[in-house]
Length: 530
Image (cartoon, rainbow, N blue to C red; front, side):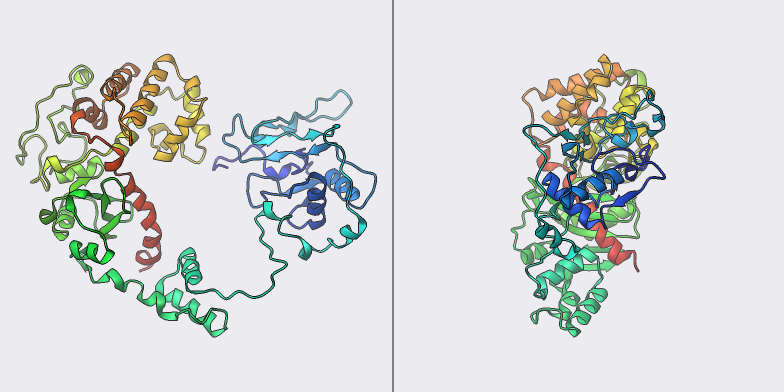
């Protein structure tokens, strides 16, 4: 479940009863014990599952094995329970992890010795004993038992929980068609040359459908390659209108926004549809250019931005380059007003700041000529949300139960990321769904957290609440009481609420951030191998 790991390994416990298996005791693998799995299925009416998961035990103790297999052979044996221990993936190490809560070291010998306590929790539900409603089942007839000795006879239903798909009744060979080969090549992450070699070999051995073409992968780029050229380390679309015509979409520049951002591997420019009716459309990509003013200017010139005049969205670092502002911790980082980021005493008491009416190089942290009109810059709701939770977590007491709960809730995150409050969208959603986290906050912290949730759900998404102004004002007030630092993203909410679109979800940069994940595999397959 986590990089931090559990206190005891899952395979130290029996999959059937959940009891701790002593170090020197015999234990039996469920992956190779086919007869044991058949007996388990016959007795409990369910297959052995989750054997491909690291959080589930993969062994059975000697007592469970002998009892189940003896009952399966027709002997007068029976388990003490009608329903075995049921395993689920743990959610945290403190309150919902069987392997951290059970302490085998407390076991002692003797009549009065304390026994190991095995909890009944959502991730490991305790066995249910036999009763009048759950009697001991009748073992199968000996003919059925003898016919199931070999693992080849296991049915699809018996192995459904293990992820097997044994087509015992259909032993005819299957010859993949072109669609099957395309899916296989994509799943394996093959380059064009590797895909052509694999298809050629399978075709040579008569293992493919005759309709499959070896050269199909070789020409997969030709449909749209004529609209892209590569110059000075940048691959970009030189004919956006023609590209839209080839795709079959009516092109209206006002209906699209340009998303510019970079990951640790590349710089990208992507068109996003306002309303997200169409998927993202990549226009420029580079694995050699860094995120700076000159390269952002190069991207805009290559895409003929002045001709189309799209609205532009990105994080505030990109906005800094678009507006020609100096990067880093500057005095006037806001592109809309002259907000003094270093005047901490006035941050929560002063809302009205002088508007930035000119961009003169050398004044008010303006370093270059602006690249786009400030009215064309869209507010990034996703990055504002990430910045708000960052300030909230940084203001938490690092020794409090709330902060420790976040560490347990995201065990795969490093301690440095949790301390800095660096979370992504799905992680924030998981915290929202937690009922325990608000209970661990103080009164002031809880008020700030509830205000943050209200702003995210009632303003920064697809739905804008009627009282969104009051929600934002309450957020700023509660953040100030909690001692959160006034960051640029919080200032934008506080002083420039009128600059936000009516439907933030329709103009969000979240779809562009998702494009980072979609193109990551392409970068690994093509660019990083060169």
